[in-house]
Length: 367
Ligand code: UD1
Image (cartoon, rainbow, N blue to C red; front, side, top):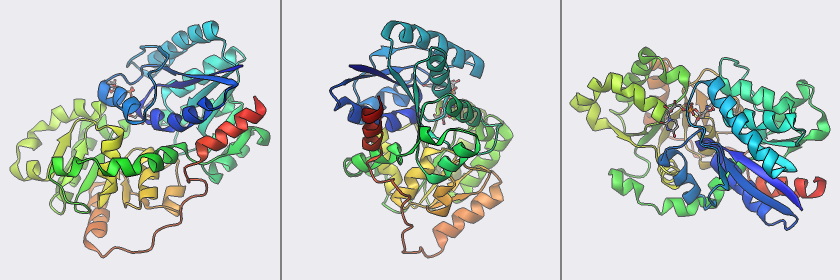
């Protein structure tokens, strides 16, 4: 019997981990369970996702919570080390690029426990992003590097990772999307928000570079406000952004602004999937949403200067627009006011719903 721990902690981890968990559970020889660091702890940022993805409750909850990067990373390491001592796993699986990912990989590697990284090799080449540091370091100390695209393989090889550790398996986030898409579309979120299919935009923002500086955020909100004169906008607000929106809340009292933008709490997985599938445009600074819109065929403007997911531009619906309001308005207007192209981009290889299965097969053969 081999014991496998899947460590998760933040919202974007859950939908990437679920397909891996579900496939590993089918292997009798493996005892697989979930540990949750508690990096995200609000019901809307965590519990709802376990419900929507039909994941069992984590076996162990570390209760780490928020803090500076050093505090959060260190707390996850201290608490997770105790779990590793007690449970003695044969493999620790970490997912994505959040602080929990690096903390889990580092803890396990120092205890000589093999580490598998799901979504390895993505690079924005921007080391001001905390996620880039997490990605670089996690990959260096992982034993199984499961990649979503071939450019990730190239990045890893360039960084000196041994080819036999790299496995191009596809995108587990897309496994979750394809599995839940039909059910999500039945959710009555559009009715609840008073929207018509194909005639609204969706916005999400949470990157420190966009929301921590009030002047930057103000300009982005002004741009979104302009776009909301063309189509209504739904804006589910991340807690980090929510804190800041209070500082520009006067805008909410301008009648025109209030009419065009609907602020909501963070949405559940199925609700958000449903909302995204019917949108005419998505504006975001998230990583995962760039991938999800590519598969859904929804035009996506990414409010960043770079992306660790270039395949969503070359083979998808994504375009980088940074945070210059003029550029955001210009590109959004083009999408909304000019006739749509009918041809659908070719889907990236292995974004087919079977990435979790491929990971399980590799681990079954090698563990
Ligand atoms: C984290 C990840 C980021 C990911 C994002 C998705 C890191 C370095 N960043 O950023 O890569 O894209 O999650 O959401 O790991 N807060 C709450 N409730 C919660 C969680 C957070 O109110 O459940 C608030 C706290 O005030 C906290 C702030 O949000 O200080 C930021 O949370 P944190 O986990 O530090 O980073 P995120 O911005 O969520």
